[in-house]
Length: 275
Length: 301
Image 1 (tube, rainbow over the protein chains, first blue to last red):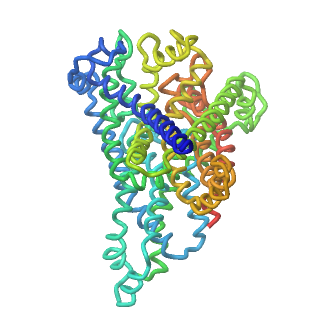
Image 2: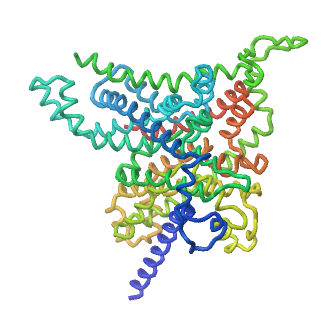
Image 3: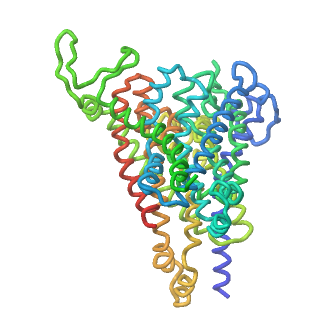
């Protein structure tokens, strides 16, 4: 009897702790999100009730902020990076997964170890190179440096998925006279597609949130959303209500994408985004 | 086409791109670290191994950049800030995550819903986290400001980001918020691999739940804990985004991490040779941690 009461108290205590954790996760997100619907005066008050407005979303797309340009930059840069990286990564991952290569381990470790190089080291020579080539402040330059971040990670993640596909169907098709390329196109790709899409979404999130490269390489034309956050200053100070509105546009799409790939999120992140 | 050609052809594009995008800049900045190049003054870099004619001849000194770095108090300050930040954020986030993972490991609808929430902070842009934390730590109207002020009377009305210690705590806090949920998910994954029967057998033998945790659960968790700790350390070592957005290294240089120090010398003072040398000082501990991580995660198989 006494034992079951003790157990109930313990359960209640656990419940309370978990609830605290959930609140701690949600409150900052809520605070950013709600700021986006506040008028400037309400931002400077802590009250929970306010008259919501959509004016902020109007203002951030107007001059001088022109956030639609940054939105386009972020989408194009992240999208192009993923479109270039994923096919290359899939080919390499297939080879690493299915064949024995000369220097296989060296090559694989080399590719992975680049994930741990601090981005600030990579960006110095790139800055100088892009300066000489006149590529500073272009989306092309951002795509190039982002590839150094995305590609190794995509190889690692997709290899994991291909490793999980059983060999038998492939071997049977090869015995029946299909060529290797036919086997890859007709059998492996369809089976690996969910994994490849997961990796693609994942890489898109990484590229979308990337900040260090963007803050150094861009200054007006190619500015991305995270860098654009610093634009919201006026003479009277920081324009928090506009930052919140831009913040919603940065985080909501990524929340949506993260939810889609929920199951693989942890597995993927264990190696990714290390820079 | 034969497999033995195809398999190399498949690896080639990726390998070339990795070499070009990662190894080339690594070598290039190593080379630069032995040269002097202030972008604002000179069009070309100057090798440090040749004497400079500047009215009189100075001695060539190959390691000038490195020596200058080691003699700079601000560099040592940033080393200290980085290590303080790294140690505290690793301990707090790993500790909290372990606790939360134990709480959430059991199934049930409530716990599974909370688990879903855990992926949100990690999908968020660190720059956005940094700038909104700055907002929430503002005196007068900041949310955290009000919350901690109400909780701890001494903190009421304090300017968090104007105080060296509190500013660092604010950065650690934002980082812990970003990382703990993710680490929790990693640890929940690890807990799923702890043998249930061993735990139950210990329970039946009359061991207290604390002893079961220490003797059975914790040892089984050590590999995944190690991965979590090393991974978190690697990330902490190159902390930049939140520092830039939340405090920009201030007040003074109280929260300037190594990555921020390098950024400052490279892209505010445009002192490329010096920044490259300092960045190599960051690469060294990173290599150590990477080696450890690789050993734990990949080489075991």
